[in-house]
Image 1: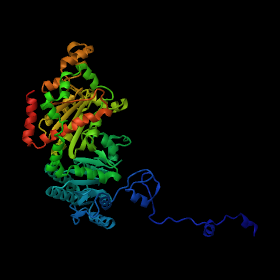
Image 2: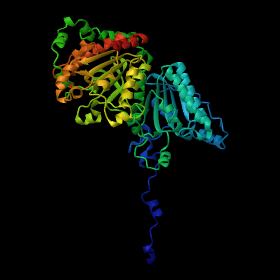
Image 3: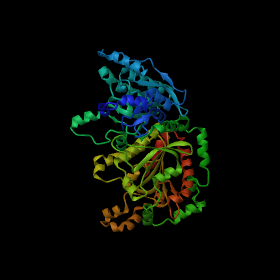
Image 4: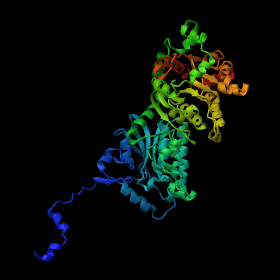
Amino acid sequence: MKLQNMFKKTNRRNRNAFGESRPEVPEGLLRKCNKCGAAIIAEEVREGNYICPKCQGYFRVHARRRIDMIADPDTFEEWDEELVTCNPLQFRGYEEKVAALQEKTGLREAVVTGRAEIGGEPAVIGVCDGRFLMASMGEAVGEKITRAVERATKEKLPVILFACSGGARMQEGIISLMQMAKTSAALKRHSDAGQLYISVLTDPTTGGVTASFAMLGDIILAEPNALIGFAGPRVIEQTIGEKLPKGFQRSEFLLEHGFIDRIVGREEQKAVLAQILRMHHKNETAAGSENKAVIAGHSRGPQNLENREDHAEGNPQMQVLEKQACPAWESVQISRKKGRPVGIDYISHLFTDFVELHGDRYYKDDPAVVGGLAYFQGIPVTVIAQAKGKSTKENVERNFGMPSPDGYRKSLRLMKQAEKFHRPVICFVDTPGAFCGLEAEERGQGEAIAKNLFELSALKTPILSIIIGEGGSGGALAMAVADEVWMLENSIYSILSPEGFASILWKDSKRADEAAEVMKLTASDLKNMGIIEQIIPEPADYTEGSMDSVCETIKPGIAGFLERYCGMETGELTAKRYGRFRKM
């Protein structure tokens, strides 16, 4: 070998040809996550609901794949597939662009609509596909959604729309803008017909879609971390000249601010949608003969609260309650006692399949009020509770059970929703009073309480309110304008706290025990005055661990209430409720 050849670089290409060869990855096996940048196996992503296994980020889902994920097999029937845009502005190059996208995606337009079954429940569904001009809403998209909603109204079917859109379609100008009004008007008619609309927001949902059909759902769900807003983040930053905070306009931001009901991951979407559809099934909400028989069967037992009232002389337990009621101040202290069951305890003990719904749709979700849908012995009901915490940390999070205006507006939204679907409303009242603070006044605490009193007085569905702890002033009354009001034996219901009463009238809060006697705030006092209908006995040391006996008393009582009131004509129901308060 020549000396100069000893110092030459080795030819790596030739060496690899005889040594180890670099492995080749089959085309389509791997793809890159556009959120975390990791290399991921495509098959894993497909089998995992198109979620990155490394960062849990969500990939956008094609419309037909979404339908496969949500609908029962072989149940989807597509509607209006032939509808396409007609280029109303004769915008140059638009038709060519649409044609290219039709070829690439296999879609005629940016939304697929039709009828399907989800968990055996029929529904009309529409799914936007972001590959087609970012699923912007032009005339064809608006027309397809409108036709689907109109047909759902005619066939008395619920509607589920999956939004994924950049908003209005610029190439169609004012015609695109009019689709916002058209789709909204169709949904209004669908709502007035008493039908359910579920909106599911995916990433991204912005612009004219957000400002129309996407935010009009009776129930609004969203995927995690989805971008949702009217104006895009860059537009906002350019307008205000500031950097937006992390998480702004994401699903979690909207949940906190009261604009969506729930964030639902893809792995549970089908189950959640099926459950909501079942709870709104017309045969169930109409409380047919089978359900009435179930209610009647539970309302005839010896624990019936109505029987306790009508036959108190023959019921030693009832006599004890009336003759040996504890002193008023002792009831005040017991009602505030740490460890006493709170609103969410009653929800978990008395109801099944609770689906919590969030937000007032204006500003905030108030943790001091918990509400949603549930079953009571097979009957769909709306349950709302003023929620104290079980620890200091929880109490701080729930503002010690003192609702803000947002909490009252949330409760009213859920009650109006119950009225639309003819669901009875059951409220659990436990609050020292409405929150008194700067923000509460800025957002209209007085107006929020007044609106509840105004609307509940004529709500066209039965309302039962049970005071389980403190019933403080207007903050309690805002959830107790009901057909009947019951109280636990050691709960209280008053114009304000005894301390406040003593401070205002006697300038001495230390006379709170004396004030409690004067105020007539105990269950037995209020029963004698005709303010409440029933008193529910409770054990001496009442905790979550001893709730069973109390719940076994409440259950037949609620069943009896539903039997009495669910069959009433609307006019009779509201007139009876008005008469109840008119005589006080």
